[in-house]
Image (cartoon, rainbow over all chains, first blue to last red; front, side):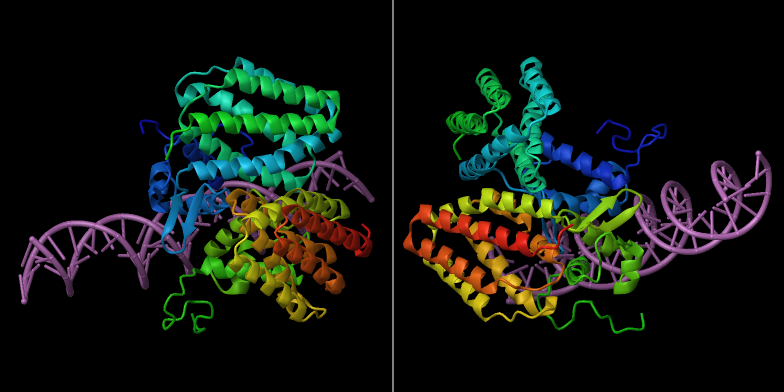
Length: 232
Length: 232
DNA sequence: GTGCTCGCGTTCCTATAGGATTTGTGGCAT
DNA sequence: ATGCCACAAATCCTATAGGAACGCGAGCAC
């Protein structure tokens, strides 16, 4: 905590049009993804307010918005806690859910794809290739970001607000798991190849192939993670 | 403080364990579904606080939680507005999403069903049959509740927290209500028969049949709604 | 040593006050 | 008549204060 004021709005910033609660939301989200807030830990409203040098009011609002992401849980009159750690069963459930939703997204996205959307996907895969992959979170963070962006783009291109919302609830959990799985990035080459395969299928314009490529990718991810992951 | 505190927790009540923001949340939800808050209308924080005779703080928290349901939208520094009317495209997207998720839930629930779960499902269908179906929201609310409970139970019995969360983000019945804008329930007989068919398929223990029955049900709901719904 | 009670600190929760921003209105210049 | 600017009211946003419940540890009785 040597930083002077990390989340305070800069005075020079012209059209921030963002209120304090938004900054607090972003800060808490970042802390949750970074692991600075460990699973099971209490998230005190007053404590976070002191930490972020704001009043409890915007913290309360940010936490209320964070609750629906599943990253924090609230008990009335007792406060918020970070969601508990991922077990192997949790991970299996998460992959089952991804296998139910993401192939559908891929199929629809393929049917409704625009050239701009395709370009964005290509950029995401390119970013995956060039991203550094060190051992610390700061190093492979951009890799994770590009990975998430790839899947998010597909969900967005499916042009279904409800499927996008459903995927987004999974997305945060995926990130959280990858963090606390704690194995770093060991499967980059294979993952990049699978992403490329999905991209190729999308480019080909065959929705069935796109869905299949996505199924293949998620199943492979599951297989690698289940092999690597530490047993409970 | 002249009033004898209308919404405050009663002192004799042992484990109320509900805070004011929860009551405000329920009240706003009811007003939204009742149509007392029309689509597009502004939902002033201070105004609602005056109306409900509470301070703006719990109203702010309740609105922050309501935002993720899609019923209200927030613009920074401008406040909340009731979400615009549900168009046919919105409804089509919702049904597309339900068709992607609910058959999977039905399949998994069938595989993992317990006898208690089956009993709960039977109860939900029975409640559907006996529920009153008047023209006002207060009258057919219990019908919607039983309908929602049926689908919710299946999602829960699938024993996958993420699929359950994904289903909940759809808020199927709530959104469905908004399409009709309060014209009531006109398809009860057919809907009940379809629910019974899903239930029978579940009882038979054949996951494929359960998924198919669910697909049939959702498609029929879509067909009836698209025929009834007012054109844009 | 064990169990109970009391008191202190922490935290959640709500109300209130005041600064900042947006919106609507009226007047003035062109 | 039209466009622009100032002013006022409403609203959002944040900080602060205080009440109520909970947790924890010291101290005392047995």
